[in-house]
Image (cartoon, rainbow, N blue to C red):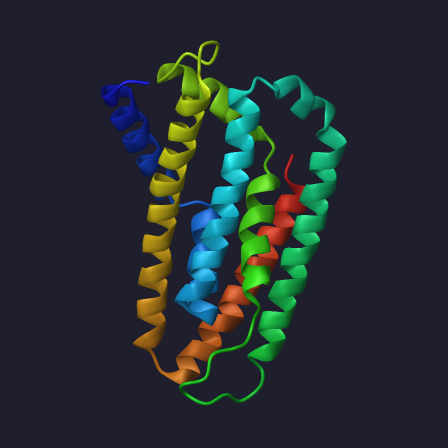
Amino acid sequence: MNFSSIVALFCAMTVLAAIPSISVLAVSTRSAAFGFVHGVFTTLGIVVGDIIFILIAILGLSLIAEKMGNLFFLIKYLGGAYLIWLGIGLCRSKLQDVEAAEVVKSSWLSSFLTGLFITLGDQKATLFYLGFFPAFLDLSRISYFDTAIVIAIAIVSVGGVKLGYALAADRARLLISSKIRKGINIAAGCVTIAVGLFLIIKA
């Protein structure tokens, strides 16, 4: 890859990552409900999922991905069920009284898995990357170094954009009262449930 293709790929992936989507919604709601660190771990899950699909696309393993269709469906259903469970827990936790400075507890692992399941639940991402990358590089001649560059671009562009959303959501959370925060966390739980249902029922 030359410098111009690196810059072009970075700009394209940054714009795509900034478009409002389920992953943006997940990062924002986790950060608004639990704080910025949880937005960071949700972002890490999304980035790891993207890296997996990027490697599948670059290594020409689309056939394997197709053969693993049942596994992807299993991941999608498990991920959807997990998100629904998290959402229900979040909604129920906000029915309790909390202090103004208190944040509802949740594990970093649950935030990471939220981002990972949302990404892995969409196996069509492999086909997207297979159609997207040829505009910027020759997949038949790509080297290990080029692959590392693409992964680095994904980490910086996708991760950077999602962290921006997480920071904005966290700042907004800190500026509101505890009563409003209760409502926002319930809304975040409903959104998480909706995302889980979407992963399960979408074609």
